[in-house]
Amino acid sequence: MSGKSRPNAVAGAVAALLRSRGQVEVQAIGPAAVNQAVKALAIARGYLAGDGLDLTAQPAFVKLDMDEEERTAVHFFVHALRVPAP
Amino acid sequence: MSGKSRPNAVAGAVAALLRSRGQVEVQAIGPAAVNQAVKALAIARGYLAGDGLDLTAQPAFVKLDMDEEERTAVHFFVHALRVPAP
Image (cartoon, rainbow over all chains, first blue to last red; front, side):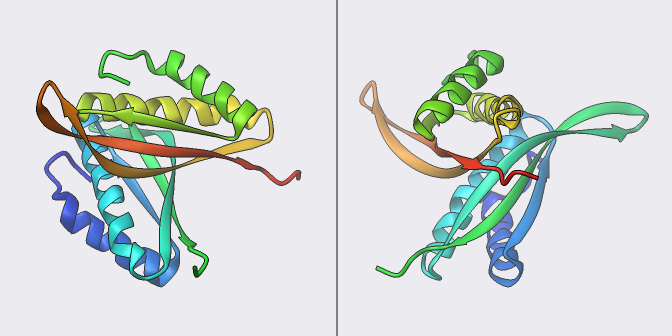
């Protein structure tokens, strides 16, 4: 995702993929995009709470070749966790 | 942490707390600080890999009163996971 991505829209997509597949990967390049990605994950956690699901993310660095220039991106491995019933 | 925090130093502290207590909380206000926090978590994952531990983070928004102004921070609940031996 980019720094211009709307966190609410990305959060909806993340929540839908976590409900259907249980995992999703999100990649961001640059501080603005990383911030938007984290916001989207925090919003998606809220969307999933009503479904008895929680979200957890594992960040890693990945190197990308873009326009013959090497850029470092942050890659989030995101998983759904089932919340025990109360 | 702030946007001026050094990710390597924060990563060392996060890794040490995860080794000793299994969990730690990291809070960041603003895009630069959120980006530094995520970098620190990604670096800490690398530090922990040699100990048979992995790291996973759950982001949430928190509202803070600072200088009589309400600011929204991102709060990361960070847990250590034991990696199964190969």
